[in-house]
Image 1 (cartoon, helix red, strand yellow):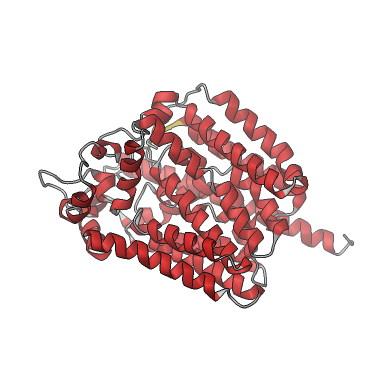
Image 2 (image 1 turned 135 degrees about the vertical axis):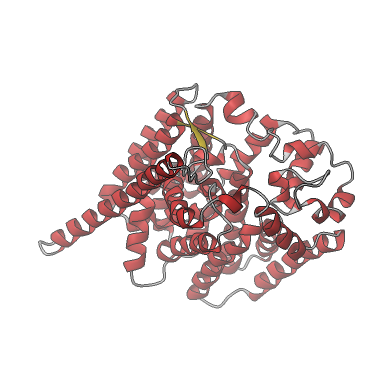
Length: 445
């Protein structure tokens, strides 16, 4: 580095720190305003606004493991990510991400942090036992979405297409019923982001950026809500679909294309909000096109497999658009009608900071000022675009620390934009955010 470059680098690093501090300041502001509104008799209807949680400082059996994972990954992760063989890196990344997710969950204890999380009356498992005829359930699904009926679906089942419920019904049918198995499946699926996002970046032509992203995906603060919520499963499924599509388009793999199309289409039946995952998918297609002509056989396979999934659900009796319109109506039958848009439209972004960490603010600052279309630039911006679209819609007020996991996990894809000497510090900041949230609050998920 020459003398002229040094001041510019210092200014850029300071700007990163300012961005990270401002992002954390937004979280603090959302907490203060939420508390002030509560005291003024105008609550925002979140138990520890903006978080859906209860203030409860505590330690737990997962605390020592979480601290160990945080220190080891922050101190050694960047070096190992640069030197390990690719397959070993992916295996190590997945194992470390799973350890981080589970250790954070176990801060709350086995029952309270994992096994009991998905067994409450609002969750999917409360409806699994009543599904004795899957075709009949699909035919009658939309008729039970609206609230205040004798047979209304519970909150989470009603708020999603039937694919989400089918996952847990399927687990039950193969002998993996109950809260513990469901939680471990969600956590295991969520840990796939530490593999799928780097695989996507590498397939799109930037292995160095893929390697740089791995430690940040391992210490992803959103792990607090991946273990255990169904949204962690959704995030892993969507990211895996994007990775398969990137591989199919750049390496001309027809089977990968078919798998990508089927999985991404199924994601539409896991969550209505995943329609906005089209934005990261468009980014993948654009980046793949930059590398050369698209593999049209793989594109055809993806389109055909996706169409088959849509056709299967439609012929079985569930019409996606009907379900969506009824869910919007159900949304305003509940507490959402009382949650003030004027608060949540910006407080939601504070929850994104809690989920993606302060490093995401520095990454996005660099991405918006960086010229050229690269995976490290475009993928985080695509994730941000999905978040902003969802935020402005008004259909996500509160609880987005888990709902937007499928989009927030793409913000660390730009970790390569951060100067290498600063990455360990940012990793420590990411870990501290997750540890503080998990030890100061008892989160609902």
